Length: 83
Image (cartoon, rainbow, N blue to C red; front, side, top):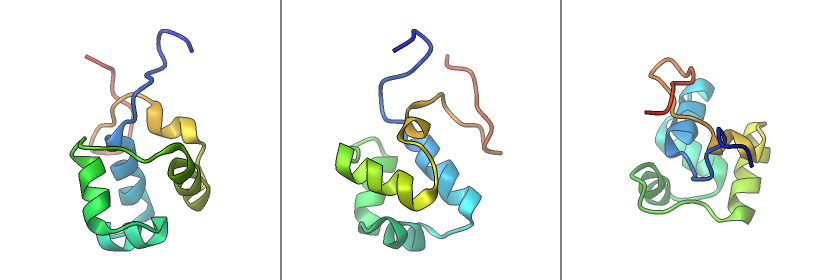
């Protein structure tokens, strides 16, 4: 892994993806096969998907698993520099 590649799950990326897809939190959780409460827990940083679940999420949303381990995201969905 390069020094510029974060190794921690970034819940902001998950939320940005939901917004890009135009889905409510409830509908997005349903698409991912999880409860809305579980989704909200991840957003708060109180947990993260395991590898198997992350692979299912990535496949369902048409992104690579690495998408969830990139820099923070600004409101408009663009990447922001790490501070």
